[in-house]
Image 1: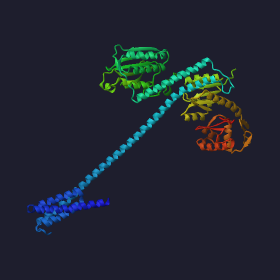
Image 2: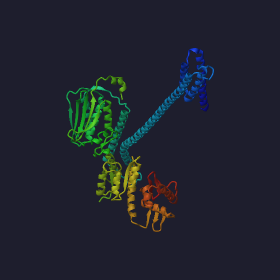
Image 3: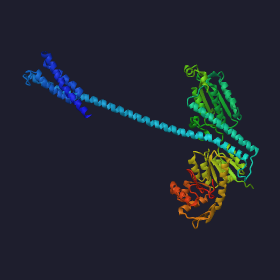
Length: 404
Length: 236
């Protein structure tokens, strides 16, 4: 580093000396045609160049050497450092001052420019460091949040898996004991036929519950991975609703169903099975969270010109506005997590999350309102009627690939 | 007059209460069920069960609150149903006075064994409750006046704190005792976080009373929770 600095300084002074010599020889060769003003300007140019390139000290040296050469070679009497006319003294003096000032000014300007450049680089560096730091901080925060969410979800899932398993395990061990007889033989007991049947029913129902839960998990995972593949076809809203209603028949026996489907609804281009699933989920929820004998109102109408709006309303508890977004969260259950207390059996906590996934995959929206008469709960959703969208045709060109 | 032991089952899972009602009834218990803490507390007050089995997570009033409310009026044995991963709330329930816990999912035999143990314990306990100067628990004969303990007839020399700890154990046979409970009972409320005291004293006590301190039969470790004392030293 030191030697390089040294080399650089020497290079500068070598250039300083040689540039003045070269210019002097050149001006001498051009000879008698140049007057002292031209000579002065040429040397001044040299001083400026040196100042810009190497800074103030070499420019100072250049100025003095140039003055000496100017005096010796170009001011009469030539070949001496004497000056005969007073004019020439003035010219030489003026040249020296100009050269010094110009040299110092341009050297300073150069330094300023360099400093400004360095400052700019510094600021840019600082900025990028800051930005990196912010990015890292927000990433770790997001990670922490998602870890927290993950463990909450895991808790919910394990609870939902363990609850039916507990009933199954308790039932089956009771039945096994009965088959094997008491191990220590100190007490004989028997379970009557009705109780045995009850145990077996519990096992049957709880395995179904586990199966439903696991199917729901798979469906939800598919939606979240963006792998929900819709098989859109043109279909009638009435058919979708009646399909869901016939499936929901066993769970709505104690309720009065009222249908309000607008006449002459256009056909819609949707995945009929998926939308029917949504309607079924809403009817199922409506029945679960409202007293027996109350009404469940199912409606469908055209909204704006390109959408179908469907709704399912019950006469049960009104969901408080604060919970209306959260009920669509995975594993949220009004009975367990919210303020609503009923002794109704709770579901898997995934129905509405799945319904939301299906509706949004169609480009629609789903939300919760109070019932029409201020009581009860209404779940409404929209679906675009659907044109032959070229983008959608492109995204799923092969019908056979859409099989889930 | 009905002399069947009365068991109250409190759980918001109707399927599980159905199963437990049938299973326990078949084994000679009279069973009633409740779906939340509020109803559980009401049944406990009105019906006076001999034992309560309760879940911890329930709507309205959870199992912890139920334990607290019941303990303020009664010493009826309480067994809590807990799940793996709920260690913290389980310890809290035991601190509040629950006697035992069982981890879901469980077999009916395990539950029955815990129920029998808790009922046996509560009858022994009511006998010990009178401030007798001398009493027996399994292999242990305790003389409070002379500060002496015999295990299977053999006299054992104990320091005062070891003696206090052993006396507390013998007065609560079979019950799960949390670190916190033991520290508060023997050392006082300022020491409830000093688990290492307890570990040292239990270690010393085991050297003196256990036949093989490496595989204790009397003072059993409940990992992360505390200890359980079996005065009969029966092999597990």
